[in-house]
Length: 248
Image (cartoon, rainbow, N blue to C red; front, side, top):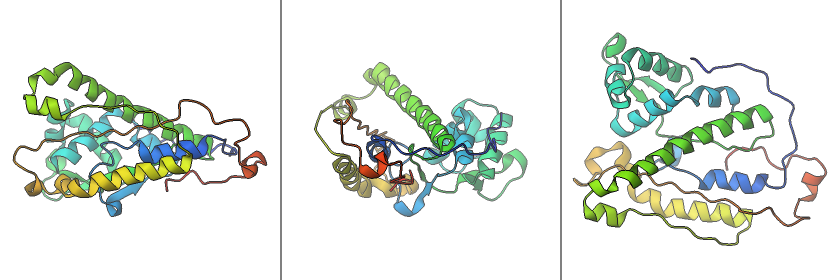
């Protein structure tokens, strides 16, 4: 079913005391949709209609498949994600409508190959407009559910991998005390360390070592308690809007 509802935006609300923290987390909590992308090739999503259109499991699966395997026809990508060519063709046209994919040239009908128009997307879940914030939140939950499902699959099947992969893969957990600004800075520093080394391998298979495989890197950082009372900035307490909810 198409998800391109043109509903009117609801009334705006003042951003709350945790919004600066949540905005920082949006930039830190990146995963497959950000890993390996150059800043010039990341699409910024800011309106509720586009966010709602993307929040569909088949459309996300199509984007993931095209990202990993390059241009494909509806039939080819359908085989990758276990969906029919008819279903894939419909959702590819919807993604084309919202500018996420385009025809790669050659072929007709379902024999037309499709490719992504960009190799990344970025959006904030913090918006003064409640409708946009709700749409962004729904997309975040869908993306994280898919990522956690892949991690669960790894936990259940990693014994099938060679020992060197089992030793190299892993996870860690730490608790540190940070301000919103420090959290934002930390996320940028980690991404700046990791991404430049490997970003070109995503779009240029010739740069991948023979034994390289796709590895999902999921960064999550979030406060586990509310800020102390009285930490609300004066402009927020007065009802002013200190930020536009856009990613930095």
